[in-house]
Length: 81
Image (cartoon, rainbow, N blue to C red; front, side):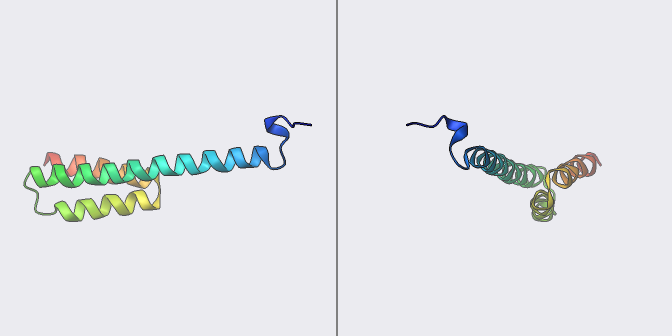
């Protein structure tokens, strides 16, 4: 006797947990990529605070997606000056 996928005990919960893990991994990699990009861009522009911008970006994405994006936006605004 075989059970369909969603009738496996714990099946829907496993799918939800798997999706949460995949989304978390994607956001983690995006945060690392944004951190690397901000650091290298600041370094290429000759910004003396490139390491500070990199750490701030990493910390922003560690807190969450929105704070990380706000740090990247602040970098854009500060980079214009």
